[in-house]
Length: 99
Image (tube, rainbow, N blue to C red; front, side, top):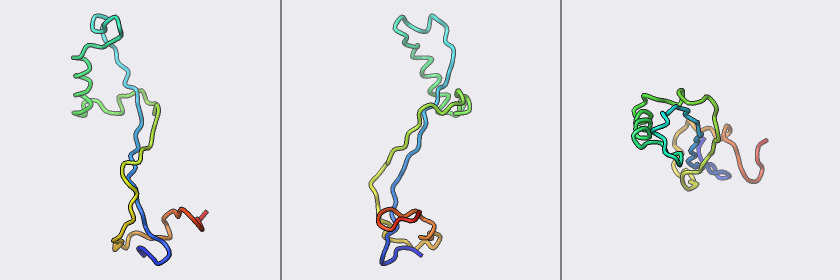
């Protein structure tokens, strides 16, 4: 259906993220008196996550703190030629909101 004379289809990029805890054990001699973990261990764990040797499934199973962040400006979609967008199925904000 696309844009009409009474409404515009708009969008905004949203990034969802959740903080998960990866719990691991380090020998005492690789943790200094201030609780700083040896840089080699930090690098190894970082690389394992980057290379998918470790994944979210290796974390503690809880979702920790989660957050939602708006990643760009709000946009009016000027070209709504995509007929897959059915305005009747989209949420409406502002006057005369659907409930």
